[in-house]
Amino acid sequence: MNNHHVMTPSPPSPMAPRLLDIREVATYTGLSIHTLYAMVSQRRIPFVKLGRLTKFDRYELDRWIVSHSVKVRRPLSVLTPLNK
Figure 1: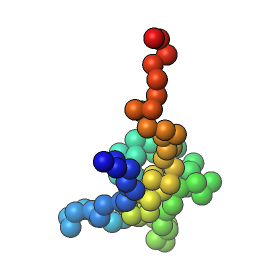
Figure 2 (figure 1 turned 30 degrees about the vertical axis):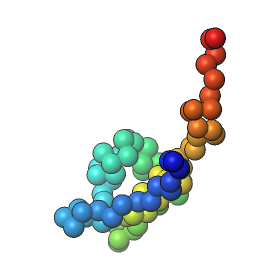
Figure 3 (figure 1 turned 180 degrees about the vertical axis):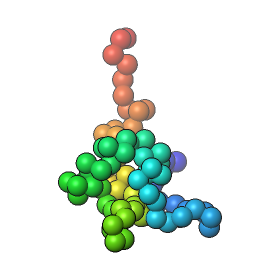
Figure 4 (figure 1 turned 120 degrees about the vertical axis):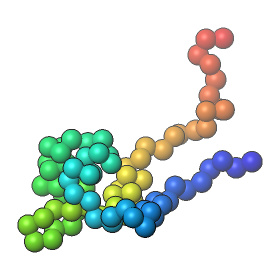
């Protein structure tokens, strides 16, 4: 059985807003507001400018998270115990 699959972002529920503010993104990602503002100023995270407001597209955030995920080198079943 093949357990390898590609993780794709799931669309938000109909009631969930597509554009999030900085506090919502901090909760969503677990990053601090300070870190997020630093990442925005360095253009290290996708964001949307609406006039003076900085918003974050939920779809783009999900794609960004997936693109920054570290992949496992080999399946756990292949690993051998260190102590025999």
